[in-house]
Image (cartoon, rainbow, N blue to C red; front, side):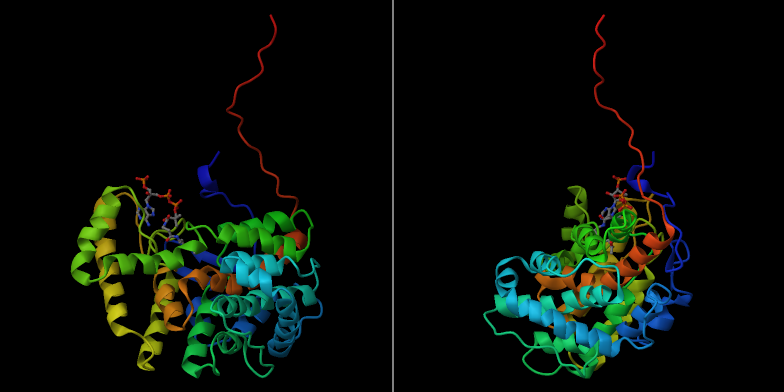
Length: 361
Ligand code: ACO
């Protein structure tokens, strides 16, 4: 048995490869830094989904915009779900209202769903009215346009697009594995997506984004960082935004997203004092982790800098994990299709360590 399935290979995939020693991520043959900042979310979707839908068009911009419009109809009807539930749970409940097919139309609706439901939930919970998607916009720009009170600034849309591209797929992470387990039973894409959404929510996976900002708030100023971090580690608590099962070096996504944040800084939108605090906290945390856990390389992971990026774009921290889902849904769908096409039922064994019935003498 391998605790946490560490080092177990449980799927063969053409979708992405995570090299934890070299700190390299490849998505369908392309290194991450050739994608982030160079292609749109729609383009990376087309790359990932290539070969998994017979009717896949080359350009997904219009079909995805049409899907956002269709999902908006469901959002209008289900406003109470989004107004009342915590943002992530509302997005998941909204997605559960969508079809559970295995075709391209289902895939597009599921991909559009978090992008439309998330801004709607934020607006409804702030007492604002809904803003409809705009057919002429790209996916990231439309998300921001549905969120804000005016059209999105191009630099902000580019930064969100970079985030969506960067986290779209990442080997057999916990949520993708959950999606593949469900797909191996030949259930529909929505069933896979809902299972994956459940897995992504936890703080050991996609739920660390908001707590990164909670940590920066608790530290407050750079001079308090060392004492705060020492106290956390001395009390056995984990530092959010650090550590990874696969990477033994810095997560390459942390670097490309730090660069995206720097591009946004040049546009004047970023609170530079906050970024400087984050950089200081990162350096202090890395040194402290090295001292406290000398046998385990604990480096900055993908949650640290995006937390600042998403905050700058105007998203409340309660929505961060749902934005992660709005990207990763594209990867989940590709993996679910790949698993259903090639895999067998995923059904491992457990080691029973409980009591055994007594045999009568
Ligand atoms: N802070 C302090 N200690 C840590 C951290 C951390 N962030 N991460 C791991 N450790 C320690 C553990 O306490 C453990 O120490 P021990 O052996 O003395 O008990 C050791 O490092 C190994 O930890 P594991 O839990 O076995 O490592 P695993 O590979 O399972 O954990 C994980 C990976 C869950 C991401 C972990 O590093 C963590 O909890 N990080 C903080 C939360 C976080 O940033 N989550 C986002 C992950 S990125 C993503 O999923 C997109």
